[in-house]
Amino acid sequence: MNIVPTMTTERLVNEKQPETIGAAFCAKRMQSNGKDFNVGIWDTAGSERYEAMTRMYYRGAHAAIICYEASSQASWTRLRHWLQELRTVEEDCKVYLCCTKKDLLDSGAAQREVDEEIVATYSQGLRGHFLTSSKTGENVDELFQKIVDDCVADMRVMKGVEEARVQLQKEDAAYRAKHKDYCFC
Image (cartoon, rainbow, N blue to C red; front, side, top):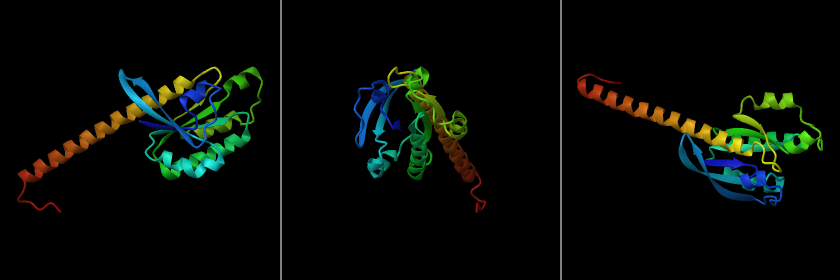
């Protein structure tokens, strides 16, 4: 399972983690429905200068976390750009919005510039919206757990669809064999 966030788990829960240059990778062992999964997490830099390079990490991603700061209208504008970029490469990727620096909003150290109603409307077509804090770790584990649970659920659905398709092919072949004197055009 591949997830392309704009920050790795360590960066989300460790404010001393250095800023990503280009891209970084980490693996995290997680559970869903009693089963263990190794989750590959690519942290792609959000800076414009690495934009062309980050596209290659989108390919094959099952999920993506696109982060923004509620206290920065510019980061919200950039988020919409990253979503468009992601969709041009991997249109079926599940997308989760992540508002960072929740602790600064809660303490009053930062003021919200991005209207909550706009975020709610924008995130309706996506898989979720989380408010997180790197400093406290608030909602970081919940965000990643939601992603893993959603991906596992989707894999089960796809497995069921594939099993049904194979069964239909078998039934069709048996029917055609039984009625081989008829023309099936």
